[in-house]
Length: 148
Image 1 (spheres, rainbow, N blue to C red):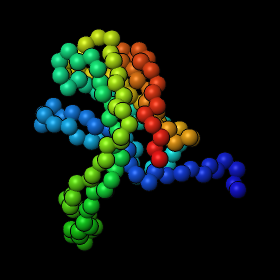
Image 2: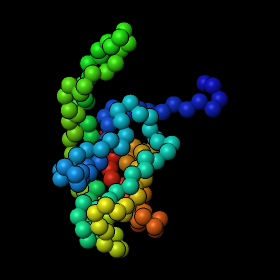
Image 3: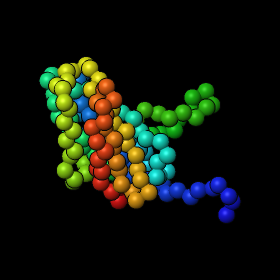
């Protein structure tokens, strides 16, 4: 083997977090790690969350994995290939693990950043999240479960 070269595994399914869209007043899935990405991760994926309601003290972290990828058609425009509009929506299957409940010390309000999350995948294939409030106070590191 060549010195300094590492062999890493790749994700066979993407991982997403369930978030609330306040404009549309509905939940949606936001990707954290994509299918084909290497793990263990070298850098954490940072996500800043806002409250979905006023005076919210608890944030619930729900994780899902990609069940079916989005499909695109390749079309040619002026002789150049380009991806068409989405042909079908991505399907996410919610993990059957109990959602993580993160409790803030202060109540939060809609439209204000409240929580910083840093997601990573370890060598043992565990999805970890480090949680901080918006003032960088550490709230804990949690194991959300094994990715297999």
